[in-house]
Picture 1: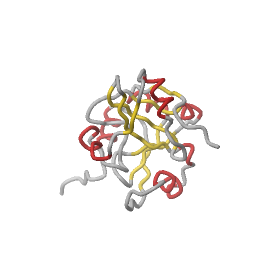
Picture 2: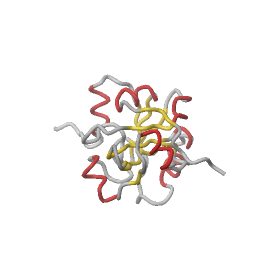
Picture 3: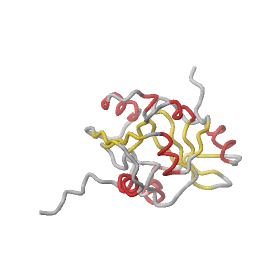
Amino acid sequence: MAKDKKNVTNAMRMLQAAKINFETVEYEADEVGEHFGEKIAEMTGIPAEKSFKTLVARGDKTGILVICIPVNHEVDLKKLARVSGNKKVEMIHVKELLGLTGYIRGGVSPIGMKKKYPTYVHESAKAFETVAISGGKCGCTLILSPKDVQKMTECEFKNIIKEQE
């Protein structure tokens, strides 16, 4: 009987190949809707400030950028432009996600994309022993250290979120 590989994503394969420890947390993935990152944090019991969503943007000078921010925050495109060396940054259209990253909306992991893009993780991640990021498919979250996220993505930790009022 063949081994069931349906639950292994590209992100997991890359972490295993690099001998990096991680945990997976699976949850029931309904349709991707508004504030789904916060809903996932609730469902998994992982605090929102430790649960990071992955977004993809395009800079006018550098091209594609990957951003990881806490699920209960919004990216500040002006701050992102400044730290990434761009004058202007825009979010990419959801139709472009699969072609650029190899992942679908709701399952975009900063690890294991088709290409290695400049990656920026909000600096708050450094305060935690572990953070949660997408496992590379809807219904799967990976728990690993921010240092290991940095090792796999060569990310920079920067202040890239809007101030909350």
